[in-house]
Every structure is written in structure tokens, then in C-alpha cells.
Image (cartoon, rainbow, N blue to C red; front, side, top):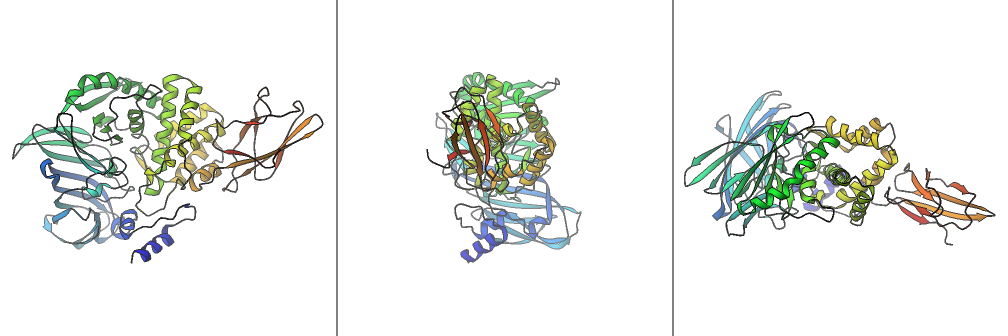
Amino acid sequence: MLRIYCLIALLLFGHTTFARQRLYTRADTLRGTLLPERACYDVTYYDLNLKVKPAEKAIAGYNAITFRAVQDFSIMQVDLAANMVIDRILYEEYQVRFRRDGNAIFINLNKTVPAGKTGTVKIYYQGQPRIAPNPPWDGGFSWEKDKQGRPWIGVSCEGLGASTWWPCKDHPSDEPDSMRIYCEVPEPLMCVANGNLSGVVSAPGNYKGYDWRVSYPINNYNVTLNIAHYAHLEDEYTAADGEKLAVDYYILDYNKDKAKKHFEQVKPMLACFEKRFGKYPFWRDGFALVETPYWGMEHQSAVAYGNNYRNNEFDFDFIIIHESAHEYFGNSLSAKDHAELWIHESFTTYAEVLYLECLTGSTEKTIEYLKKQRIRIRNLDPMVGQFGINYNYWRDSDIYFKGTWMLHSIRHTIANDTLWYNTIYDFAQQFRIQSLSTDEVIAFFNKRTRKNLTPIFRQYLFHTQVPQLEYKWEQKGKKTILSYRWNAAEKDFNMPVWVRTNKAADWVKIFPKAQWQTLTDRKNKQPDLQFNTDLMYFKPVEAVSR
């Protein structure tokens, strides 16, 4: 059955650019594909209500899913990990039947829901959610202890899926318009989730309930719980137009003084991102950093921070900058399919480069930073993955580092920084709080820059081959003749490059094609050819040995 289902998945959703064969299960397809039982409805609101039991490493409660029918249906699919126990499911306050298929739940509503109608299903459940083996890369719940031996709990589930710990429509194309997260924890622990804290109440058994409200659409994997002995620091950021943004830090109580100093870099970062991408996209919910027992994660309006208050050699904290940039790319502007998580990671990793420009104003520093990223490119898989399949593509480092070099290369293909900055800004604004596809990204950049960038995007996104600039040269009297052409997987690859015949010569911009072209230098008899690989990601290859 597994082999047959994998073959079906590859036939339906495959493309031929994969460098490594992967096997997928029925569960991967049920999670990654919008089958009719999922496509039939859109989620408008989640009301997640949980009690967390640290001693048992368990949770219990319900999620009420409010939806709008896209078409007539009577059976709907919701996702929840198979190890979590469903006690009962209600529709319009009546208990309804359901069946499980692994991590998928098919709910029979006992009546046809007509297109356009709204309704709510409430799923009561309990269990011990998956413990994270290596968060955030291999996620789940982290049941840790702080330095004083007190509970310190966090959740990370990108790629793995939010349905590992709460029932939802676990597909990136569908986000609720807003959400409530109510969490009860033993006193004196505090629970920090997404959005704004609207109230704290006493609950039975020496528990306290924390009521958080998210007022924007939110990716399922961005929904989080953070539970610890937190101290709360309040600050605010003033935007260019004078509007005030609430800035909050939730840190372990004994790190309060350290955090106050270290997080001074947050407001300059927000100013830089406002300049390059527009105002912070979740303004009503505020910006927060929450100290976590794992490295970091872009949880919307509650960014996970676990880098131990350390700056890198470029004098900024990589986790603060990277995870906060995800508020624009990944949280506000989101991919429609798991296969397109390059949209999240490539633009976010490139945002680090733009932040370093803001910080230093130095081109040399940004090139140095980019070179450190380049050595981590592996070229094992295309950056665009397999459609209709749930798979942790974000673990493949090329969607970070090859992605940022793709954008760096496109920037220098455009060769107009004013246009480039305006394009990135307009991109973040036009698709603010929206989902989009790879094709929509490419179409936007083509239209905004008035250039055909499609072959360049496709070369890096859909192929593993590094574009090779083949060259050869010959001496004819006092002239040096350089011949060159592209050897690339994408037929119409058309990226320009800069070349000089020796260190004393000026850089010359050439426009290679798949056919041989020539450049004649009448001044230099003994060429020492140099190609500027600081601006583009390609490999010069001499076609004829000398």
C-alpha cells in the first residue's frame, strides 16, 4: 500500500527536478493536499482552549473551528496527530460521528452544509503531544527546566505541523481571520501565546488561565505556547509617521537585566525593516520576543528567542533579526503550499543582508556576510519542492542560503538599487497578510522591474545545477579574444556578469547566452581573467585548458 500510494503521489504531484528520490506516505498526502473534504470549507476563526499539565507532559481541552462553506458538503477533514485522543466532536452543539485515517479526521456533520453557510465544530481532545527531539528543526513540545530547575515549556512545529498538538485544517493555504488562545497553567507559571493578553483568571486546582487574542490571520505553525517563570519588560517603537507600536519582552526572570540591554537592537531593527518592507504588519497585536528553551522560531507577534543573548561577529543577534524578519516574509506574506517555503526563508535570509546594510552602510561587510552564507549552499535539491505533499522543506538549507544568493544575483541583474529597494518594499506591501505562489512572486518581480527575470528565478528554484559560465580565450597579435556562453539547466538563462582581463582593467558587463559570444581586448597581451562572483551566484569554467 505504501509503495502504491507513493507512486500515485508522484504521478499526481511530481515534477522531474528532484535530485534525490523521496518516499512519501498516505499521511503526507492527506496533510499536504487539498482533497475535497478540505477544499470545501475555509476557516474563519479558531478558539483554542487548553489546560497544560507539566507533570504529565500532557494537554487537554478543545478547539472550536468556525468555518464558511465554499461548496455544499456533509463531510469535512480536520487534522490531529494519531496519538492524541479525541473525546467527542460537536456540530451545532450536537455530537457527531467521525472516523480517523491516521492523522486525518473525517467528520460527518449529518447534514449538508450549503455553500456560503457558516458553522462551528468543537473538538474535545487530550493526550501527550509529541516531544521535540531537536527543536526547532525537529519539533513538538519542549518540556525543559530553567537554571533553577523550574518548568520551561515551549512549542515548535514548522514543517511538522500544528496538528501534532491541536486539531485544525493543517494546510498553509488556509489561515483563520483571527484566533483566541486560552491556556491554563499551574501557578506561578505564566503562559505567553500570540497576540494580546486580554485577561488572566483563576482556575480550579491552583491554575491560572491566560486569554490571548490574535486579531490577524495566522499560519497554523505560528501558533504557540510559552510557559515559564517569565518577567515582562514593556517598551514601544515609534514609526516614521509617529504611530506607537507596543513592544514586549517575556524573559526568564533572572535574565531581566541582561535582556534589557541586549534587546536594545530591536528598535533599530524595526526601523530598518520599516524602511525596506513597510510598517510592522501586525501592528494591533504588537511585537514581542519570548525567551524559549530552543534556538528560535518566527511565531507571529510572539517571536521565539533562545540565542543566549549573543551577537555574531557582525555585531548583531542573528536570531532576533532573522526570526523577526519572518513577520514580513512567512507570517504576513505566506506560501500557499509546503513546496514553496523558499518564499519564507529566502526573503527572510536576504533581510539579514539588508539589515547589515542598515547597520554598517558597508558594501564590503554585506559581501563578506553573503560569502559566509554561500559556503553553506549544498545544491542537493531544487528549492521548490514536491507539491501536494507535507514535507519539511524548510530543513533544506538551500532555501535559505541559495535563496539569498538568488535574490542578490537578481539585484545585480537589475543593477539599479533604487528600483531594487522599491521592488522589495512594494512586494512586501502588495502581498501583505496574503498567501501567494512561486508563479505570483516571479510575475510581480517581472512586472515591477520591467525585466524578464523568469529564467533566472527558475534556474535557481527548479534546478540543482549551478549555472556555469564557460569561457575560453586566445591571443591574436596584440588582441585578446574572450569567448563565453552559459551552460545552464534553464534554456533561456540570461543573467549578466562582470569580467575584467586583469586586475588593472575596468570591469566590463557582458550578457552571455547559450551560444558562444566574444569580447575583444586590444590592450592586454597577457590576460589574467577575473569574473566578479561577489555579485552573482555562478561558476566560471574554462572550456579549453591553457
